Length: 250
Image (tube, rainbow, N blue to C red; front, side):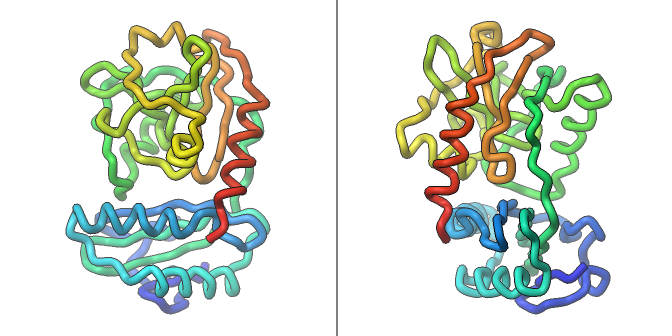
């Protein structure tokens, strides 16, 4: 697999990265969907990474260098539908990989993760704790999980943001509940499609419809929570996808 490492095309085996496309060590990362070798909302992702890097003391190249590296990567590793991951470690190195991606078309049955989870407003790696939550849910017979924070508030999915319909309103938890400020989440807020407020676990039974949202899945309908069926809001899911593409130039 060819990758961009510190701005140059190299083989994955020739750089300090795992074969799965993750830099070794610790740092921050962004995951971006690509359609026809065009990254969706790349500038928004870079801006979010820059914000986290400033807070965490991580050195990053300038946005132009990253965009040029991504363009070169898409030339040497084209994908019809792809996943671009860009990671920046705490030693000043950065890596971009472009891998194929398959849409998740089936709605998902989810459970509430049995333990409180320490959330994060920064998208950090290693990401194993989040993948572990997802794997535990699958071993228990579910497709994914919803996590709660230490205060008992509903926060997000294992690797996604969460939006829920309660009393006819679409709600997403605030970043003060230690929720990642997701790109699709922010688009929906900017366009007045979501209210932002905490969702105590006691309101779980009030959720009538829900989606996981992310830059890869865009909108992924939740068909049940803890085996309780939800309504599938197909029209809103398609609206989310359309909005993501509408605001995804650059």
